[in-house]
Image (cartoon, rainbow, N blue to C red; front, side, top):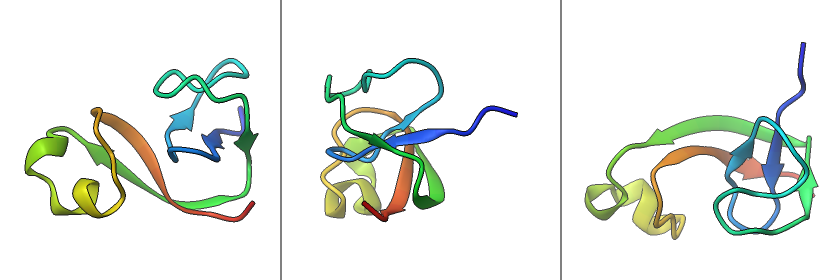
Length: 64
């Protein structure tokens, strides 16, 4: 089983690789909780509060 990582900068969940596909950051962590799927960030209040601008999978809380 692959342990998913989350970007320390934007919170995007990264399934493969060592670089975040959303923001290009190399800082990833395996210590995160909760998962949300953002389909339309422009109309999502959660996306607005978490400053998410692109659709995708995101961690709710990071423990860095």
